[in-house]
Image 1 (cartoon, rainbow, N blue to C red):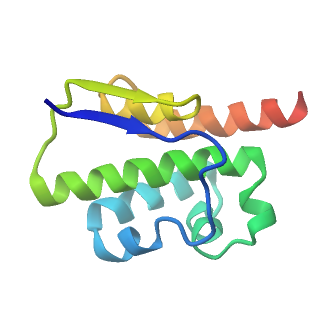
Image 2: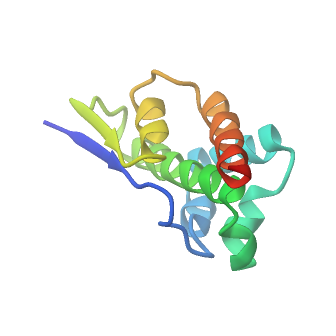
Length: 123
């Protein structure tokens, strides 16, 4: 039985996802899709920082989602399709879990968590 659990906000660090971006076509496509959807270089912020920008809630949330799904897609690229019996996530990680369960499209998820982060920052 396979269960996938995804992290929430505050699990970010500058450099996250760079190794999988460089080694996996599927992961690279996820980062590129996030960059396109958000119309910014989220991948560059993840890989190079600065840390202050990565900590901004409206950046941090799509960055963690994107890295989580990039890692998942890289794993699937190596082992084939996964059929988890359970998916879950802590707070923000619930969005990654929904993408992993095919309940939410990645592009919609990255838009949603970017908006969620902006609204949380404003509140």
